[in-house]
Image (tube, rainbow, N blue to C red; front, side, top):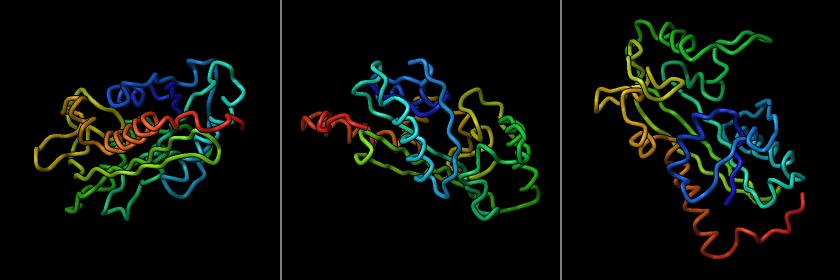
Length: 216
C-alpha cells in the first residue's frame, strides 16, 4: 500500500522503511505538497491524529495519492526530574515565542543544563503513531522506551534529536551509539510502527484495506 507520512523529516521515513518494507513510503514533497501543521493537542495521540487528518484532507483530492493511507506520529522525551518535560513539546523545547526552534545540539545542551547536579536521570521516549484510511476510520498505537539521561552527549554517529544523551543503562550506551537496525527493534517508534504493520497485514489478509468509498 502507498503510505504518505505526515512529516518532512526524512530521518523518520528511513527509520520506518525497514519495518513497513511491504509498503511504499512517501513524504508530502514526493507528491508535490508542502505540508505544515501546528501541533495544538495536549497529548501525543491528539497531535499524531491531528497531523494525519490534516494531511488526509490535503491529499484526498490528489490523483497521485488515490488509495493511499496516511501515517503520522508524535513523539517526545519525558524526564522524571522535570515533571515529564519536555514531553509533547520536545521538538519545540527552549524555543522563544515566535522564534525559531533550537537545533538538536542546543536542545540537548539546554536539557543537560537543567539536570546539572540532579541524581535522578530517569526518562522515557513516547511515540504515538496514527494510521488514517478515512476520516472516521483510523488506528492509533502508542509505545514507550525507558532509559536515562547521560551527563554529556556521546560521540555516537547514529540517531537524531535527543539520542546522543538518551542512555540505555543496562548497556551503558546512548541511542546514537547503537546500530539503526537495533534501534528499530527496541525503540518507541519501532514498537509502535510494528503494531501498525501488524494491523496493516491483518487488514490486507482480510481484504479490508479498500473497505471505504474513498470519500472525504
